[in-house]
Length: 308
Image 1 (tube, rainbow, N blue to C red):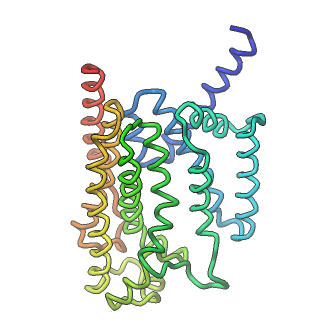
Image 2: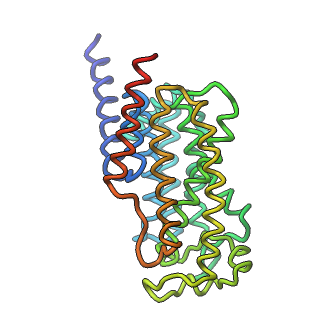
Image 3: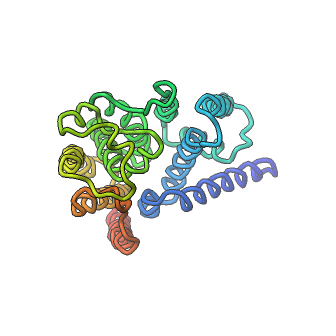
């Protein structure tokens, strides 16, 4: 191997190491699933996560206006596309993602959709009007772009042969994002965003203003609990798709998907057990429970390797 080839391999190793560091630091739930993957797939998943994290951070940087954030995102996306076209990658995340998309045949159009989802939050209705979604169909499109697309990327890395896996991965992403929306109702409202469909608010007699201007820490009233319970019921229905997806994934990747689904579903269950009080305290899955779920996933990974 030439010195130049060795340098390229080391650069790629360092790029993946940088992505793993980002995932370890930022991916509070995802990282536990990543650990249950074989190293090449784990590297690819961490690279995709780091790419997603960069886009999210640019979109959410409140030091800048929405217009400025769009400019920064456009510049970032142009740099990524230049790398895809053979340009030199100075960003380790771009280098790792370019390798991962090639290695696992991930369509670049999926990453474009992911960025499109991030930019949806940069389309304010005007002045100080909150960001809202009128119907569940409108919200579904947002969830598809920011979560289902991630699922469609992940199953390319996990490996599958049955085309049904694509629809099930899409719906699993919807389950995860609805869980995130429930957990973050108070936090999003503080940022002038309400992801609960306006038609659902109206059906339960909950005003948009009451969500945006709550007394900090006040528990939900019965109308708000009923509203949040309906969203949770929708999420539960989509978790059925996750269970159907598991057997369609390559055996050595199933433990990782099981860990991810188990942690997210546990988060939804904690919200339900708290009687939908997502205002007094932000729901989370305790570390000990995550580690217990991970232990099961690692054990299943070891078994999958033994019987392969």
